[in-house]
Every structure is written in structure tokens, then in C-alpha cells.
Image (cartoon, rainbow, N blue to C red; front, side, top):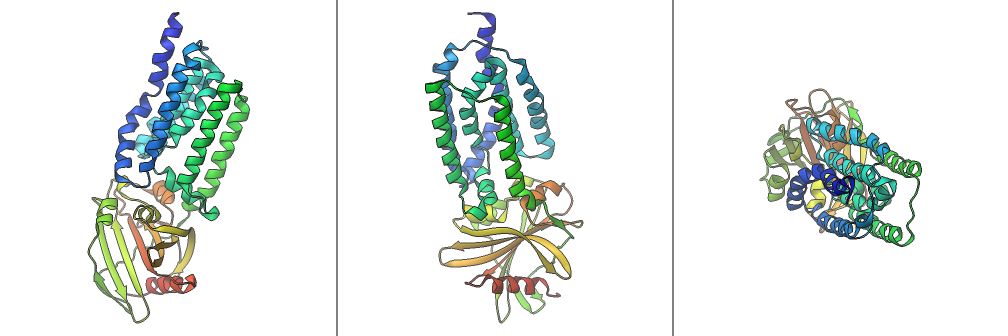
Length: 358
């Protein structure tokens, strides 16, 4: 066995080192998030795929040392390092797997990288919150994120099988064109979550709020589980026409303790019927917010959610992550009311409540 071939397997395993560093975070997310928990199946499937490669084509493969793959190594390392000051674990996981795949490409050439792609793509399905974000991006098409991930995993199994039978591959240029097209489409679908508007931080408390009377309500287990150390305020306001449930989250410096409202609902067993970013005129300001129509048991609600500090407000969680910095006094608001067949009635009630003068 030549020295270069002897080095190929250790270097391949070294390429997965950064992903292994993120694995404890991924495992912890699976323990705490019901939406992420099924992703363990994709990790097991990727492990089976890696075993097949190690015992099959990679066992016989000669190292190619294709230096053109190194153009992917530097960006992957840079993005992994950048994920720490940005505090974005998803970016760290994606960049770590990109580095692992680049190392395979460097050692075994494009043919080896193409053979490994189904396994790497299956590992990408273990990215935390990917179920939620795929469901959110494709909400207009009623596509469930987990169902889509299972479909992608099945396609990867088929692709790996075809690779083994027919020994084919596509050109690198065609491959990267397809990847960039998919990324562009995903960014387009999520772009509206970055909408920002003027700050809107109503001071809500038990007592009187305009025509509404309010009382403080106890926090439940789900509230404490999702927002943990954040300071929570929960109220119910009512007048002669309607009742409004309010949750105010005073965001602390740990960004990972703040979650999108629909993520919390899904994790608590609610079904999201519709979710969109809207701009609503409140107190003569155009405020961006997430509007969520959800059903849980026999209850249907319309929920408005937004994030605000003293400089701006944004309706989407990605916008919040984009603009968030610590020590800026961010608050996350969730207001909900019962919704019947006519959602416009529920919208008017929420808007009427927020336009009250305390």
C-alpha cells in the first residue's frame, strides 16, 4: 500500500471532524425538540451509506488528489468559523459537511465525490430546524418538511444504488448549477421574512388596556421548555366582543432560547393551516408581522407574532436573526384570538386591540 493511499482514509475521516464537533449540539436538539427528533433516522441511514461506500467502491479506490476541490475547502472553513460570531448552528453544520465532501473530492476525485454525495445529502437532512424551515418555505404548497426530507432521503438511496449499478456521474458544472438554483429558490421563498418596519413595543400588563380588561395567566410547561431562561409575561385580555391571549418574551442574550411562534405550535401538536408575513397598520405605523392560522383539537386561532427593539420591528424569525444583537432590549410578541370561518373578523379584533390607547 502506497503512502498516499494509506493517508487517504485518515484524511477522509478528518474531513468529518467538524461535523463531529457539532454532533453533541444536534443530539441535544433531538432530545428537546419533537420536530427535530425524527432526524435520527437520517443519521442512521447516512451511517449505512458510509459503510457501503467503505466496504465497496472506496475500498478499491485509488487516491486521485484532485486539487481543484480545494477551492471549496477555504470557503467551508471560513463559513464554519463565521458561524460562531454569528451564533448560527445551522451554518456551522452545513459548512462542516461541505468541508467533509470537499475532502472526499480532493482525495478520491470527482467520481468519489459524486459517489459520496447521496450520503452527504442525507447527513444534511440532520440539520437542526430543517423540518420547520422547509415547512415554512413551502407552506403555500401545503408541503410538510419532514415528508419532503423523507422523499429526498429516498431519492438519495435510489441515486446511490444507480451509482453502484451503472457507474455514472454528472459534470461538476452541471451539479453546481443545480445546487445554486435550489439555493436561489430557497432564498426567494424565505426572502419576505427579512421585512423590517418601525419599532412597536406595546406595554402590556394586567389591568386595563384601552377598553380591555387584562389578567396575568400562569405559564405552562411548553412556555418554560421553549423559552427557558427568557423572561416571559402571559396575559389574557377581554372586552364584550372578544378575548385576546398575549405572550411577551423579553429576549435574553442567548439567541437559541427564542423560537418562531409556528415552531412552538407545531412542537405542541398544533397544525398550521396557513402562515404568512403581513404588514398591518397599527397606531398609524406599518408593522410587519407573522400571521398564523392554526388548529389544535377543537380550537382554531389566528396568531400575530413579531419581534421588536427600540430601533425596528420584523415579522419573521430570519429577520430577527438578521438584525439581532445582544443587549438591545428585543421583545417577541405573540397575540392570538379564536378564529371562525371568516378570518377577517379575527384580524379586525387583533388590530382593534393593538390600536387601543392604554
